[in-house]
Length: 530
Image 1 (cartoon, rainbow, N blue to C red):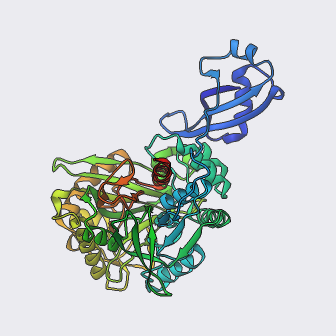
Image 2 (cartoon, rainbow, N blue to C red; image 1 turned 60 degrees about the horizontal axis):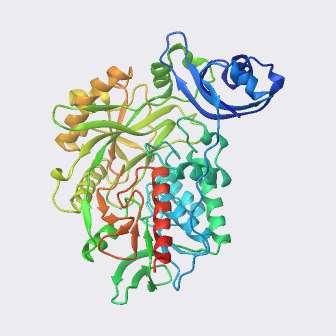
Image 3 (cartoon, rainbow, N blue to C red; image 1 turned 120 degrees about the horizontal axis):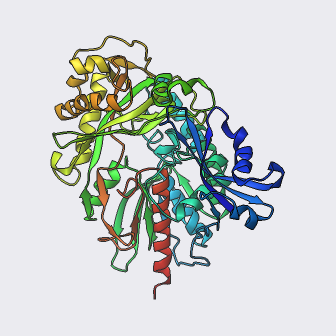
């Protein structure tokens, strides 16, 4: 098998020319190509001559040795890497492990533990995805929040109501395994090779259901609407979990718990702190959602090629490092998507972004966030207090009914209240109330964003356009708390394996899933230790 790297094809021809381009490069007729597989595809919009698709592919051809002898340098012999396999099987335990949280970290931890033979009990404080979708839609339409079933809490985790992005800066052998499992559960095949893969929230919901059915078939006991309320460490090495459910409170005596709570589980962090389980404050970010017309972002990124119809909806990844020492950066950009209400508390307003797989909505939105460090607040849980303060301020400014405070960029830069939209129509539901965000958010947040906007507008034309919309507030990009651990185990509570984004060790679906697998490995390794 041969690998061709850096194969460039004009974007206007798309995949239709791929096989012919491969044949031309190898100097063989198309009929001699027995198999062709895309390993990676990205978009290169840097050239004035036009936008290109850049491929890495593998190909099987007749007489491979002869073809390779005359091929250019970007053609090499390809040896497929070995796919990660969970290294434990046939595990037994006197008490089944418990997995708390059914987001990416908890899901993959539970899946690996179950396939190793341990059949964990899974506690998810929120609802199954079918009920959760109904509850979230009701919230978006009416502003009536269910604090137990919302964008933050429920099967699949917060990312289920985002974009299903699988991009990550983590380099880990477990990632191809995770990709294949997601495809097994119904994710699109193109996540194998796109440079910026995404599932889309519409398809991700179906993936989550398929994963749940797999866990159930493996013998897992999945308990929705069951919230971990307390942990007691016993002298005999066991842990007692205190659980609240609609059927009443109960306890579980166990030896190992994988804790994957998500970053909105503030009551869980307070309980851990109260129980003396070591936590640390960490850096996080707060800010707003910025919204543009997708066609304007496409034109800025692709130029004239933006209208050819074969290119994906474009996005951006921007950062500015300010003289103040703050950083301002974009996060969780959702091309062809909309801004969503993501609150989990009755008196606090939170925004996030969401896209469906097609990414074919009118607007593009992204988080525009300002760095926050432990120097900005007091105490281990001070970051949570700061988040709450901002969320409550936004809630009040929006009118107390989950309408979000919003302002046009031009008015924001001049510190003038906005009275309505121009060319960019905000997509947040149930709706926005126009205001001056300088009266809503702290000075350091507003000033940092104001300083950064012209810088970012120089990098992506129109990013700082006067009619772009800022919607407040985004506070849940990452956890402000870390559950301290060593070798995947809590350093202060033997038997507790914290993992994922909420525990402070991940930043997205892929890195959270990787961390969940690490936790499952650590659990199994502890069972094999004499």
